[in-house]
Length: 157
Image: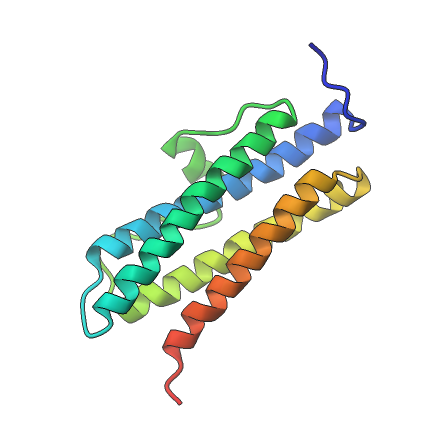
């Protein structure tokens, strides 16, 4: 059955493509955060272990919301590691960085998701796609706040 929500198929496809990049970024950040939760060591272990757990649980819920919006627009959501590697602006981290480097990597990842979300707004606004705009705004708020909290751990003053 045809989708008739007031957004052309071409524009829905462009929005879905942007959301697919955001989904890939979010899933990649989820995986990194979960990895760091498992492997963090050092004097900040307890704090970071719990913080990373909170963050990866939030990201796990976010990927579902993003994927469901892609589906509501009428397109398949990417769901394989290969697709995520191709679509994500966040690069895989090999090895086990020290705790402070983990924090720096996650700050960059949080900021990357924000930048990807911002890149979609033009087509979303042009089409008055308020549900996607709302999703993007909520995600940006979460990622900007999380980046701030992580950056605060790096302050030495």
